Amino acid sequence: MRYSIATVCLSGTLRQKIEAIAKAGFQGIEIFENDLITCDASVKEIRRMIEDQGLEIVTYQPFRDFEGLPEPYRSKAFDRVERKFDLMAELGTDLLMACSSVHPQALGGIQRAADDFYELGERAKARNMQVAFEALAWGRFVYDYRDSWEIVRRANHENVGLCLDTFHIFSRGVELQTILNIPGDKIFLVQVADAPRLSMDHLSWSRHYRCFPGQGELPLDQFMQNLHATGYNGAFSLEIFNDQFRSGSPENTARDGYRSLVYLNRSSESVTEQQGELLPSIKPPAEIQFIEFAVNQTEKQSLTQLLDTLGFSQVGTHRKKAVEVWRQGAINMVMNLEPDSFAQRYHDQHGVSVCAFGLSCSNVPALEQRAKQLGYQLNYGNPSTDTHGIPAVEGPIGSSLYLVDDSIQPSHWEREFIPQAHEPHAYLQAVDHVALSMSYEEMLHSILLYRSLFAMNPSASVSVSDPGGLVKSQVMQTPDKAVAFTLNSSQAAQTVSNYIASRYAGGGVNHIALRCLDIFAVAKRLQELNTGTMQVTDNYYDDLAARFNLSPELLANLKRYHILYDEDEHGVFFQLYTQLFAGRFCFEIVQCNGYQGFGTPNAQMRVTMQAQELASFNA
Image (cartoon, rainbow, N blue to C red):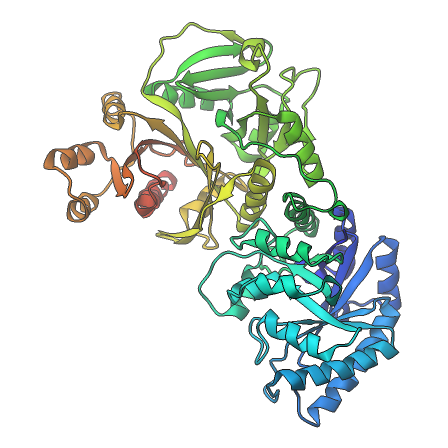
């Protein structure tokens, strides 16, 4: 199984792209024409660069506007292809990818196109070349892979085959059953791309929003099953047009690209021997067992005071380190002040922040093996100081995701911490979800991480209106919704999401949602203890009265305690927010009575009030 990627996917010069692609582990590379044209090295030097990195050129592409042309355009197209064959021979590749024509002079007709491709096949054969024909979703006449296959079938030439591109197929909503009728040896190239579901023209969608498999919302699994059934054994290649990829680190992008192909090809029971070892089967995490904060002494005092008002108690002090555990219900908040530690280094870079999460996992060895196959680096800490023995992978924004094996007894809490007597409270039960603010590039990386390693599922992405612009929000959650991370990103500089990300110097937690059984009891406690909560406008409650059939008493209590409300066909939802801590994050208290969502209709109110709070914070 050869994994390949097109140079157009990455930022940088052609030399930088080649080096990043090889370092990521790819065996093949697609040379995008513009990358070659703009390179100041000769074709022979480019070939040497590629060969020195141990890469094979899978294809040279794209060859545009070929089929269906009248004279004199037809003859000029054949002249062009001969020149491309000359270049390819010098470059050391034998496959030309031709995409369907958008030429204004092109003429329709399946047979006309088939005749053109037969002649092209003859010319390719004379030069020991092959041609793969791709149906562009915006092609003038050919925009459906079933038509491109019929053209290839009618051309009936051994040097002419098909290029299947998942974006062009799914963006057109074309059925996949026909793939089963295509002989595997007539498929010369497969390009896989994912994408979010968007309502826009095919060209703009393709040019800006493609992403790696596992980062979008396209149902790639069925495509892969049908493709494997054909017997295809050629290259799997990535052709991704994405604004963030083309402005980010080529090394990071290439690494995510490679692991996306591993995830796509090895996570199905239909995996063949040629595709490699099947990814170990795992169960998603059962819970967020702990949330670890990187703090200094002053910040710890303020933060634990807030935790105390929320009902938390200190239950343990680390036997050797400056680390404390605060607990309520199944929620563990860890305060880490240890000098010369990961937490301290994280604090130096990001300030007071959440630096780690502990995820309860049922089969840690399988997760470790899965992480290795996907290319995620495992960190076991410093053996002389990190005696907990819990492996971790790097999470969003450089945080740590600890893989906690609950089957090990005694637990790490008992081994590592001196217990402290405390008076338990029962206001809050568990972590509901955690919301993070980050760049869109980091968001795509995080989606792939949660999905490929932890088998978490993405929700449909939504746009939240912020006073400073739109924020894209997407939830990654386990099938039972026991673990959920809400990822937020915005390209508008003045949004709350971007402001918080900038305060963290890269991104971080926006809010931590904690579940309770009686939100009014929690709200009353916070009010009695003069704990600041997010203020909600009177207009919001007037609107609630118009939208929902709420009793006057309930509406009055919601307004008194600044509690937000929503309902769906499954039940009702209550939520309130504390004020931002250090202008960075807050705690959300939620009560879900059968409700299935995350209170998305109230998100605009939250970000609007937080924007006002941040404005006064900076005044």
